[in-house]
Amino acid sequence: MKRLRIIVIGLSLSSSWGNGHATTYRSLLKAFAAEGHDVLFLERDVPWYAAHRDLQDPDFCRLAFYDSVEDLARYRSEVASADAVIVGSYVPEGVAVGRWVQRTAGGVVAFYDIDTPVTLAKLERGDYEYLAPDLISEYDIYLSFTGGPTLDHLMRRYGSPAARALHCSVDPEAYPVLDGPIRWDLSYLGTYSLDRQPTLEELLLEPARRAPQLRFVVAGPQYPADIAWPENVTRIEHVSPQEHPAFYAQSRFTLNVTRSDMIRAGFSPSVRLFEAAACQIPIISDHWDGIETFFTPGKEIALAENADQVIEILEQWPEKQVMRLGSAARERVLGEHTAAHRASTLEREIHHAMHRKQVIQRFAMGAEA
Image (cartoon, rainbow, N blue to C red; front, top):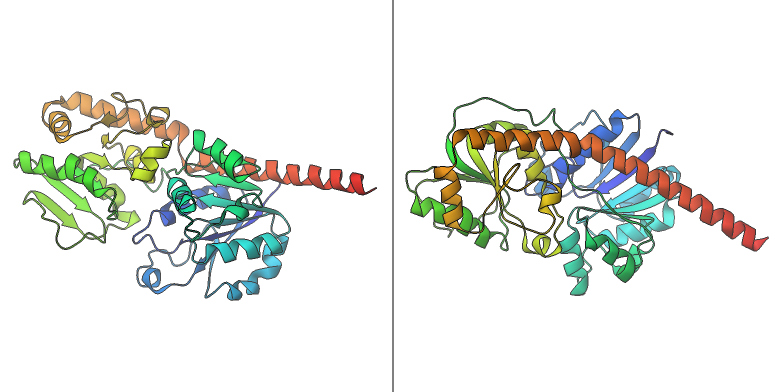
């Protein structure tokens, strides 16, 4: 296929602090560039990411910073000539950025929503922080973190000409299987979220209270100071992506907790699921519609609804069963959910959108004649 020149205007590539976007973009764009495509990533220069940058000079794409929507004009010619320009969710002033891109770009324009259920809930409330309803029909593709019925909803309700699933993924080279001493029976890696906290309470903190002989860890920033952590729960403020494999390797199991909007929508796998599975770490997860399309419950992932079920898994599952769970999950990820798989999807959808635009343009020219 033709070598593509794309521009991504995303939340962050340079800093993984307090967000899951950076690791998603890194693995996807690295794999995309490996196919010979040219990528420019434009990131709003904000102090909270500037203070926590853990990727300054990527070797798979160009990374540049802009100060405001007006400052994007410096890249007008590149945006106008690119094969595709992708605007991401949670980009500061994303509505204004989207309008500018739609006016300026000469090629395909796409929206990449790494937060689709949250985005749709915000739209329903009239909260247009980074996307407005009228923009959706003007994006040639709506690339969605969430699959399933949500894609039909985006096309029927909001007029997207092509809503397509582009789930998170993992770079297997960055998330290898490591050997190491086990420090924790159950780990959790994630930024604090108010709507996730009740599930974290039920599936990790309550088991910790009931089973003081077991060891737990919660890693991630922004947890309130007033949380009462049991004595057998270790707290780690931040684990950089480079340290994720070593963190997982010290865990007998790791926990996946899904945000409430994602649970309601279903078909919304977290990037942490794929990362932990690539590291061959057995996963305990809450349940949501569509999870079985990514991992087979009981064979590739363990599902739990309450503390009793978590404790039963931790204390009663034979070690051979635990090891088989981790191995099967890794095999599934390597076969279906790597960054190379997602890059292939992105490439295909851009080419399809380019073809649709050409057909529409030819039809319009014929009608005028």
